[in-house]
Image 1 (cartoon, one colour):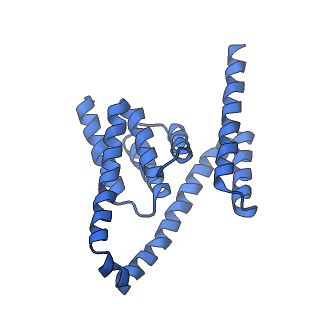
Image 2 (cartoon, rainbow, N blue to C red):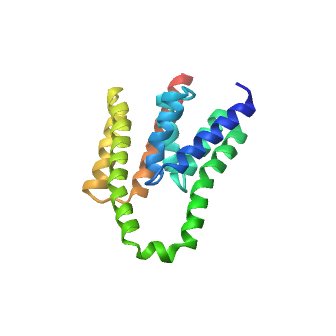
Length: 187
């Protein structure tokens, strides 16, 4: 596939995903997986999990970070810029329109109830993402990733540990494991 065609497909795909994704970055991760792994077969499932982890770990919006890492993986810097541009356009336009009509939307009971109803759908999509990602880790039957996943869940949901601390600890564990694997490979 030619680079221009690839960039165009990246642009259209990320624009579409961004335009029709409600509920934030965690929702777009599962849709990116469906588009780029299941439909286009541009990225492997395991690699998508790694890219999603990078997007979640980096500062900023997960949707934008996901677009950056996927765009860069597929087409280098031009792919990252293309994907980010396409990802940012729909929310920018929508928020601009909403800000113009904010006074009307704020007091409209129907709009308020529609948004409240969408929260239930967003919860279901996030649960689906968690299930898909956890199932992939558990299927590998590797004890360290499963243990990290269980401990991170317990730390956050049971003990109320700030997510930032959990991410930092997981990054440190990942770095330590990568260095250990590199040393074993060098021997």
